[in-house]
Image (cartoon, rainbow, N blue to C red):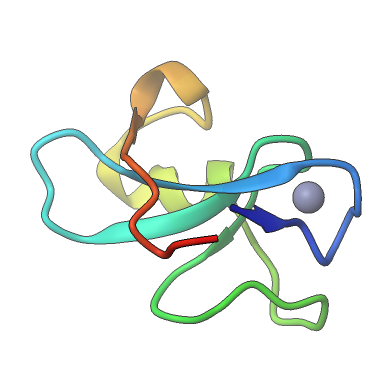
Length: 73
Ligand SMILES: [Zn+2]
């Protein structure tokens, strides 16, 4: 897994909104989301709450589905 480059306090995991094909990476500690790119420390930042808002969902981890990490180590 990837250690979060932004907060340096948590792991980045792959997840998706249930029943959606698009996946994203999210830090389990600071809730930063990266879509279609590797985690990095620079802006622009997207957080889980902002990512889920267009789906009509609150920024809660119970609203997303964690996937197996397929990116290797
Ligand atoms: Zn983080």
